[in-house]
Amino acid sequence: MPKELLPRHVAIIMDGNGRWAQRRLMPRTYGHREGMKALKEVVKASSEMGIEVLTVYAFSTENWTRPQDEVSFLMNLLVEFIEKELEEMHQNQVQVHFIGERSRIPAACLDAIDRAGVKTRDNRGMVFNVAVNYGARQEMLRAVQTIAAEAAAGRILPDEITEDRISAELFTAGLPDPDLLIRTAGEMRVSNYLLWQIAYSEFVVVDKMWPDFGKADLSEAIREYARRDRRFGGLKS
Ligand code: FPP
Image (cartoon, rainbow, N blue to C red):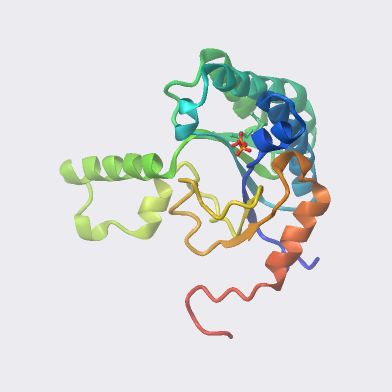
């Protein structure tokens, strides 16, 4: 595919792990484990295709309301994912970033997150953002508070606040906005994900559950994206 048709930034809502497992009469956690394998394949495929940024929703601020054992399982799985995959991602020049609030994340998980960030920070390949304890409204609230404090201190005037300034206070500062947002398991919601950044993203909803999503499905979503006529609110050129 010509480079100009490839999305620079792909964001994914990895949904349906629980349903995938329940359909097989297995515990939900089994679905998360299989979901981890799908994630590994998608990271590798995205980096090989030349995608610049991949952002995945691993754990939302709302996911804390799940049963405690499922929350712990997901946090441990994140540590396991980093332990198993960090070396290969590093070899492939992937830069691993975590986006979200650090509060509430268990220490072992924060350690793994920090280790991955430090090890890969000088890499020059794909930026892989893992959203953990992430919520877009909280992200925007944090940005507003930072900018309001600057204004209160007299360092910026309200009129000088621009869209770029707001973008620069988000966890995705410095990265292009997602061109393509993929959600699996057929749900047509954005679930508090990257609300500012997806203003003009193309949305592709896939019926498959996340554990069944692979490289071929990613390619198909990208082909669908390439067929779309993006106008950004203007007229066809
Ligand atoms: C949605 O499925 C998925 C999640 C809440 C977690 C995403 C986690 C993974 C893909 C596991 C691997 C990744 C790491 C790094 C931890 P769901 O449980 O909401 O499914 P359901 O809607 O069918 O219940």
